[in-house]
Length: 326
Image (cartoon, rainbow, N blue to C red; front, side, top):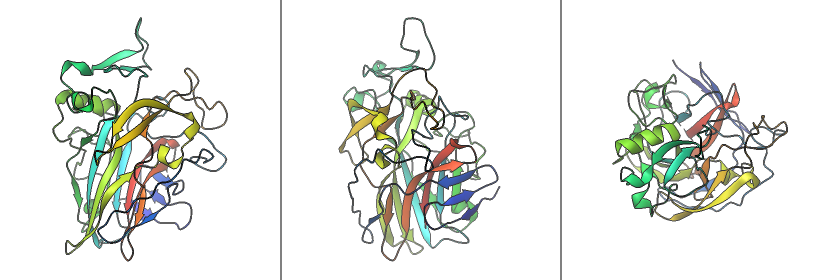
């Protein structure tokens, strides 16, 4: 299955494939200009008035709202160029952590969407038992906020499968297990293989994990370094209905080992959020970092690197994350 990529100038970038058409809502973080091979950063403020995914439809829309969308799996697309062989080589590392918070930082994670008598929800993971060293024991015994680095993925730009991929899983929410390739364009069977993760951590993140950040390295075809830095997927950092994100009080650890403030999406229980047409109450419990890194960089005379949420034919319910190097 071969996807055709059509770049539209202005607010939207449309990426069409035979399964889903992803559409960029708007570049909500300002692009940061950096010198070749360097990594400048710029701090943006939250914008609580931003309408997502389209003007006139305010509210919380996220690929990671697994309890209010039509598909449990999330697409992660990586696109190196548009048509024909790319002039760049691209290397991508993902940083995956527990994407949901049950409101109690006690090291025992519950799925609050599944009722269980006498408990906050269905018990998913007791992270205090020693089987979650990367996510809990080495994270000051915090239930959320730790990230596990993936093995680097390479796209040399020479062939279609080396220029683009849509990574998802046919069985789990976050594609961290090999052999569970979904329906996207992924002929190489790529997934986010987690370095040093225990089987218990892999299982937990497969079902409740989320890619929070990427590290992207770009070279020319002669292997001269053009860019290397961290990207944050635009979500809370882009002002995605920020007033509905609650500070957890739990510190996070970003990929550069600096601290980070964690928020989660929880404005009430029991009301289904209905596409922004009123009733803006969401209980997805999705976790996100406050602003740490830009979601877009522009290298003078070189590539633009962006990480954004893409929307499909079912809008936010079929949405995913896109990295574009162009």
